[in-house]
Image 1 (cartoon, rainbow, N blue to C red):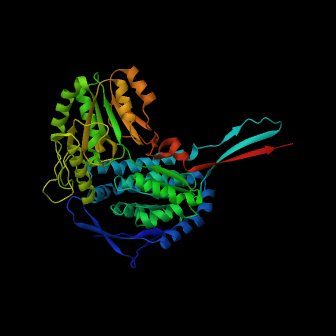
Image 2: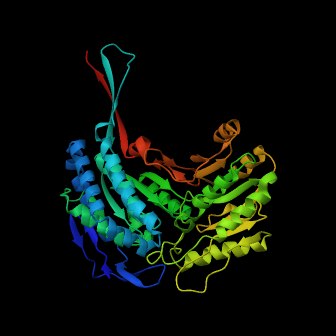
Image 3: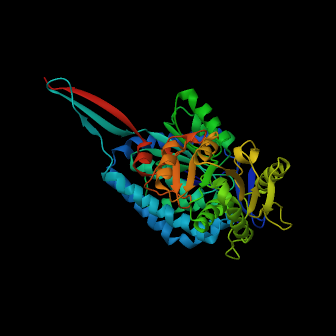
Length: 476
């Protein structure tokens, strides 16, 4: 049994005066940790320590800041087996995906550390004689990171690594569903000698701790990965101080399969993009558009493979999927399926809550769907794949763009003319072509529409944590 603690100003703090909250294993429903609901006052304290630490941290050479990230990465690799087990217990991931998250996090820290010598300002040509125009890139100051439960360990690094290497300090709030991995992260971080106040972690709810991390006047950037509803609340809270926001919110990724696609490969890639983490990924393929001429053949192969997707307690066996994060998520997914059937969808496989302990749900396919149905328009966040047929390429693009979300998309075709036309016309931040939906750390993970503001990863993700300072220097 883990007792969750905060990490503030370089010290672990156990909040014995607060309401205790049980952390459950979603596969067994057993209590695996005790956390608590943090307070506004404790969050304010952490922010104040981050503010006090920021000036000296900013003055530390970037290459020295980067060395701390490398040491944390090494510590993660040393405790990789323990972290993999914890991520499985907390969130129900498969062992392969949990291990990937651990090592990807270590790689990400090292990748961001390498930007220490690479991010730079500019010298701009002046219209005046003897004048120099200099553009500096400077840290924002104190940043905050509000984390989700679906990739809880990696998201710590995604928010703290670019912040720290560019001279910012940070206060992080892990999800109440998955706080253990964050505790271990801070244990690793505590061993590398990071200056006090540079990294702080406060546990609690989004309504209290998250709100303060967005609303506090000493926060210079608030970054959240979460639902559309949570992102809007953060944006509203941040508006009181005109604080910069970085929002990665929901997605409803379309997967378009044209008649010239390699059907077998497309089927497998679509499935891989739907069942990863039991469908609980914002860039998962959420809706499938298949051209009429291959619809029957494609659905037959899709249903056959989706029916074979196994699920269960991934601590015990290497199943294809684990559980959904909690009972509410299980009920929400099932309600979406039932509503789709009432709306005229045809259940091809899955669609029933298993009669066993744990928040499991089978891989599900629903054909005969249309774009007006809730299951096409609303994020499901579970292993459910609704299928819509279309006649022409132009129709497919219109259907795909008919969404309030705009995070990821994919297309399967060997006609490069149509592929490039799709890239021009699709209203999404990402498009995957003839492959599964999974981003690279050197890319830029960003959406449009209600999927968010700003982005993460690569050069452009790093620059989210920098501001510009333009200097006009007259030497006459």
